[in-house]
Length: 67
Image (cartoon, rainbow, N blue to C red; front, side):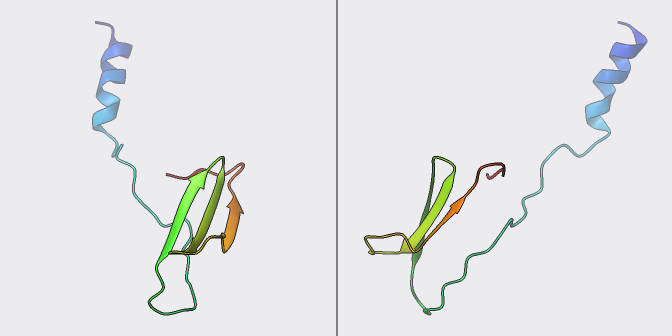
């Protein structure tokens, strides 16, 4: 085993490789107690009040990452 291979094998133990979760954005709805449901499809996040037939908002995610 070469010295370079040994060093490369050692690197993952030097760093915290677990990603941290952060909130990219928050969604607040003015009506207290309203349940908001959302979907992510075709690079668009859309949300609506539970039971509604139309979306209250749509956000284009092109060029952004989401998990």
